[in-house]
Length: 249
Image (cartoon, rainbow, N blue to C red; front, side, top):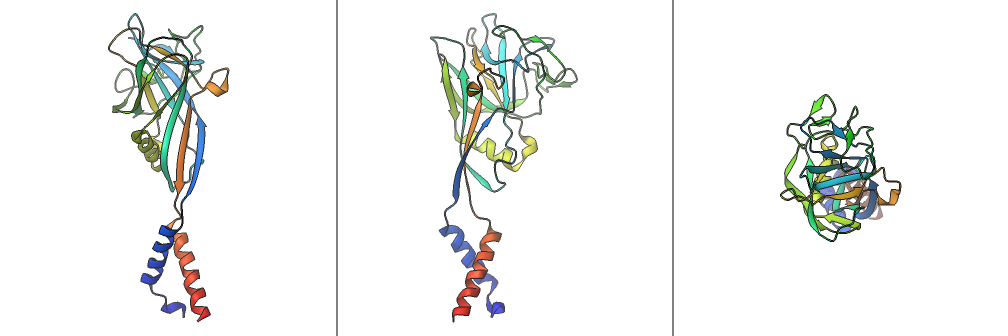
């Protein structure tokens, strides 16, 4: 009797089951695996890989500051996950009555985080140490960026205004697309670069980093995803249902 079950019958039943069964939804929250500040410098010798803060924007001098942050998707997400939404949240640690726009863009080259640790408010950085990402280096002293200030997509993945002390979140369809792409191609996951307004001085913000003394203030990535049953498992279920139905006849 089993031989009489055509492939088309199994395919049709499997398809119907996939459409009928709801996907399972879940949420995961990740802290940044690594993060650092890029300090504009002609020599590229400034770093802050292990600092408590990340800085982005333009200083009063003016000099540029950009922050890198990356999250390890690891094994927390199944390979067949469908990313529904992505939210990046960061905590501003420096007070200001003004608001400026800050954007996240996908980094396109690998980078590392060193052990340098600037003092005070960390606005000027410190001497780079081996492995630090700097303005000129993806990994100091031997691996250079293709472009000074980091290699990243020219298209912003998300942007929002940032003001006084507190938590701020970025979410968008492009951020969701970024994570979906990294899930499919893990070796291309180099995280995002955070940039402030770079056309005028005095726009910097200081954010708490993953090395913050208060872990609850560290950058976080919240991913909402669903999982649709695989066609293989549905085909097996369809086969068992067909066999059971024929046995009842």
